[in-house]
Image (cartoon, rainbow, N blue to C red; front, side):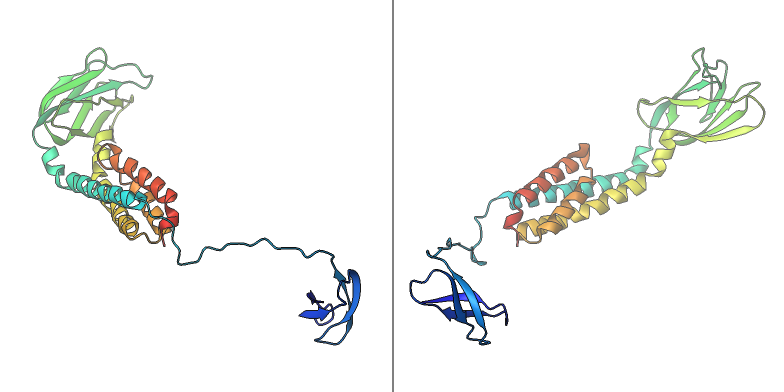
Length: 260
């Protein structure tokens, strides 16, 4: 009777012979190195479970998930490019026409200041008892707002007037003393970053197109995933781009086995 074993001397897998029907510890000789060895012969032959291996050429059934994800990423790319381009090209048109400007003035203790003289776009108003100054029919765009009150430092403030009804009231604190304080309003500061925001939206939208191509080709799931993450920051109108990118990301994860 023959069987396979590993020789403890030469460490080779060899075939050795023992008497037919023998069980337990049996002496035999290694056919490779010639050394006498002891093998343990079991009474019953153990059967190994047959395992099945999927052939590398066999692919799983394809679904429409990668195609849907690719389509969504194309939409993200288009909306991002359109939004970024709109912001860049419409800056001049946004600041045309007339609007209104509103602000509130208070002292160092947070109390409203009445009687503050304000000058904006060749117009003059005085703050009311609530510290409110209000300008109407002001040309849209960037302006310098001057604030004066006896006993307080004058203020030179860069402000932005939009060509529609005012939705934001600026707040300014006047300090006691002499001299002039320079400030920038929130909208004015935000307007300085509009071009950078537009370019940023366009740049982060480009990977969405790259991810869409890999989804259509069903290749490189990792790259498609990374590109869809970039698409989340493309924003798009009303954050549609971000929502679509998240959906595309989920679809890619669910169908990643379909990518080569």
